[in-house]
Each structure stands twice: as C-alpha cells, then as structure tokens.
Length: 122
Image (tube, rainbow, N blue to C red; front, side, top):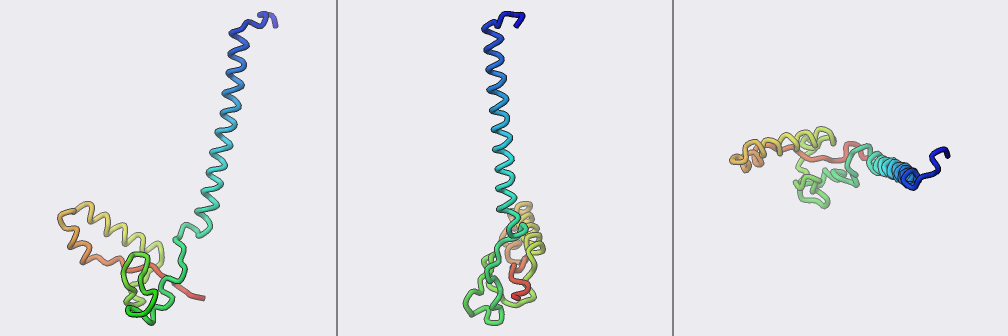
C-alpha cells in the first residue's frame, strides 16, 4: 500500500501465486502417482501373479500347462522354487552371463535356476 502498487510488484505477486498453485498441483499429482503405484504393486505383495504355474506337475513334462514362467518344462518338484529364490538364482545366472559373455552358452547350459511355481495349491 505505501509503495502505491507498482506494476512490477503486482506482476511478481501474480507470478508467486502461479508458482504456488503449480507447486500444489505437482505435489498432489506425485502423491496420486505414488498411491497408484502402491495399489498396483502391493496387490500381489511384489510377487508375480501365479495363475496355476506348476499345479499339474504330476503330469509333466508331457502334460498340459507344464511350461513355467522361465520358459522351461516342469520336470520335477525338486526344481521348483519360491519366487524370492527363483529370482535370485535367475539374477545370478544372468549376471554371470554379463560378466563372462564369451562363456554365455556354457553358463546357460550348466546353471539352471529351476522354475517358479505354485508352492501350495490349496
């Protein structure tokens, strides 16, 4: 009031409020995206959706639905692991292939991470 409302002061005030509202909008948008991500990722507790992977293992390797998420046949229950073990074993195999690219075929042949499947059907 005492400055007489100069144009530059009015312009800076309007600009400050524009930044304030854009900041509010951006923060709300980020919170919304985090909440959406939590809804999607927490539905299966960070695990992949099972369907019926490995439910009919007694008919494998020649029966229906004997291909696991890793792309190999379920041959026996001894090569079926829980999700954490399977992802760790797959990660180690893939890391070795990256570290030793000249031995990638040998690593793929000799290191079998097994398959991920249903641990308990009921």
